[in-house]
Structures are given as C-alpha cells and as structure tokens.
Length: 124
Image (cartoon, rainbow, N blue to C red):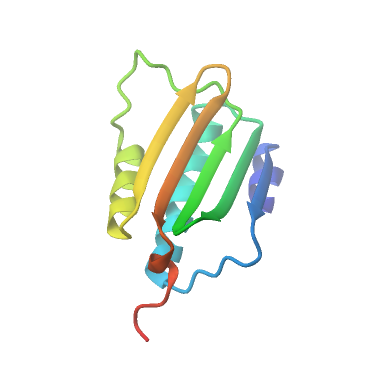
C-alpha cells in the first residue's frame, strides 16, 4: 500500500479486524492478486485518489472489499476484460463469490464473500 501511495499519489487504507486470521495460503495468494488487480484498475481506469481495502467477518461470512472513489465504470462499455475475468476465476478457486458495483459518482466497489471456514489451513 505504501508503494501505491508513493508511486501514484493515491491514498490507500486497510481496515481489518485484528481478530481475522487467514491461514489458508491459497486464499491469501488469491486475495492478494484480486486486490492488486482492483487497485491497478482503480488507478488506471477509474483515476481514483482514494482506495480502501477492508476485511470483516459477519456471522459465518468473511468479506473482502475494495472500494475506490474513482469515476466508476461506464455502463455503456463492455466490462468483460481479462482483469475482471481473472478476479472472478480467483474468487471461484477459493469458493468465494465476487460482486462488482460501480457508480459514476461513488466509484467502484469489489466485494468478495466466502465462508469463514475457508480461511482455515486445510492441510493440517
């Protein structure tokens, strides 16, 4: 996040409950890549100046949310690019659903939801 702030002059925040513990390495790797793609898209296409990445647990669901204040995605354009397809693929690999919402005034929000049980290390 520091590199993003320095290189692109974008405010980047992480909001996470300290009690969240992700032990599954497959989940960690895929969340990392999804976040990276979302941040790159927010900067390159959305011209965002603020990006917030948050992690929370609600009941038995883990939620990973990337919200930017960019110009959103144009509803008239095709949004089936490789980056979005790969994010969806990565979400499915770890048993998560990925929802993308965008508004020209509020930016883009990418929300990944999955059962908290998927955060545990399954190799034990």
